[in-house]
Image (cartoon, rainbow, N blue to C red):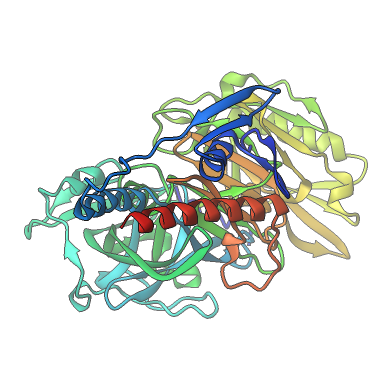
Length: 523
């Protein structure tokens, strides 16, 4: 959605298995594979609850030599192709920037596009769908940035040997209509126009080219991987996008529509249909962004509201220090211009107008004995000499299914300045007059793992120190595989590996090794 408000100056159930010297927790599927491979041709196994099961094992082919090697090779080619096409990897992107509107007010990453690859800085935006970057001969595009260490660049399709414009007859052009106002230029190029919530906008045309990235498949890191994607080539920008103080090369839309990069890569079976981020709120910001599912035992999930253009959730109630506020759930219901949206392209947070005043009044009442309230430039602020964490209440947002998001004071307040030794903290939640829209922006999303499970149509979260390593999982042809520290490729921090995961990986590797040896002996 991109609202840059800077007005302030559970894993599966496991079965015990004991085989020889091994004793490990294994899923029923892996247990069956282990039994089939390592036990004799006719074997008896105790599965669970004392149940005995006899497994007669037969060869796929007769023991005679009636099968030609060419037939076996042809069968293997089909099987190998199926395995390769069913494999998913985890893609890791670096994260820079911070929620702090006095410093940056946005989080961004770097993407490599074209042949040869060129690097571009793009904002991480879950409120829009399409990846776009500034292109050559762009009207109104900034040429320099006030953000430190950022050199703006322009994508020039004529200098990339693999760039191809998208024609109006291309079916991918029709996908673009889901995300923007699409059109057709006189050169038969599929064009677009985006308008964002802060009044800024961009227009241009779609181009297909390669995106380059590092991928983790299994326990291996594959560098210089690439996949074809369609993205926007911006030829015109307006509003805040033209201002050089926080200028970047473009916007990386992570929405659900067909032209989002996550949708394109998952449809190609390059990555799973899930992505996650963990945005640091302190010490200069940064964080983790992966195409894959971060695994954390404290994650709670709530379903997405179906058939919505954004990541809409069903917010049901708000509580202060455990006391539910008297706000009707109808205030948060989703309709054409109402509802609750998760949007990393928004700096602050917004409450539906009917909920905003009761929320502010309840906060004021809770802290009235310890702070001095004041209004500055239309914003509710507080003057205090004490730690806001000790004074301000904990806010709990409860969603469908009972999933609760707990907000500390630092998740809904922003320190503006100080007066005479006292700190001025202002409310980070705002209201949009005349709209029943609630937006959870970076102020709320920071210091949390956020998982966008598009395949399961749900969003999960857990409070987390985003400077720490994370485990990421991906669904492959062999089931769920967990990747250690995939959110910080190249970081020297120690990985957190549970011993049972290592042993499980060893067993699966042994299974595959035996299968390969068996095939080679036939050949």
